[in-house]
Each structure stands twice: as C-alpha cells, then as structure tokens.
Amino acid sequence: MNISIDTLFSEDELAEDAVVTALNHQDIVVALSAALAKERVAVLHMLYPRTDARTHRSLDELIAALHGHGLHQVARLVSEEAHYLVFKDPVKAWKTFHEIRNDSLAVGVHLYYAGLVGEAAERSLDAHVHGRD
Image (tube, rainbow, N blue to C red; front, side, top):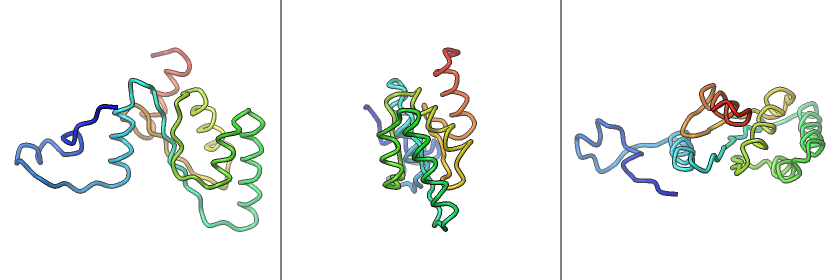
C-alpha cells in the first residue's frame, strides 16, 4: 500500500501549506479503500444497534445465513460484532453486503470500494464482480 499524507488534506489546505487537518472515520476508510483500489479491497463498516430480543434473533439468522453461503469467517466476525470487515475477495464482499442489506434487521452496513462510498461504491463493486468494468 502506498499512501501519501497529502491525500488526506483538501486542495485548499495544501495550497495554504496547512500542517494539520481534521478527519472523520469516513475520510480514513475512503483513503484506505482508495489506496487499496488496485488490489480491489472492499471495506464494510458494520453498524450494530443496541439490541432487543427481536434483533438478537435477526442477528442469529444473519449469522446462520452467512454460514449457509460458506462465509464462515464473515459469520464469526459478525458474531463478534466486528466494526470493519476488510475483504480481499470482492465476490465475498458483494455477497456479504447484499445478505446484510437485504435480509438483516439487526445490522446496518456501509460499503467502501476503490475510494468510493455508498451507491457509487456499490455500482463499482457490482460491475467488478459481474465483469462489467
């Protein structure tokens, strides 16, 4: 991975020779996914709400579904409530993202791929996984 500190500063800050900038977690994850774009690394930011019995059942069902898709490592990490999942395999990232997004009431998820977030990241990952890039 080859990342420059300048990628974390805005163009205005660079022009003004700023020595400090403020970042939030999304800035950091976008920069990480951009730096790893050539390796086609996908990052899922997992959101686990404080749960009641109903969402615990939904989380258990999600874990079972992930196991059913052969995503055993992912299922283990979700059961441990990992906050960021970093995938070397875009196909497994796509399967996990869609399983969570479409079938889970217990977990929210944000996708980061190739320096993109949200719908743009989803389109890019989908195109790569399905050979349209």
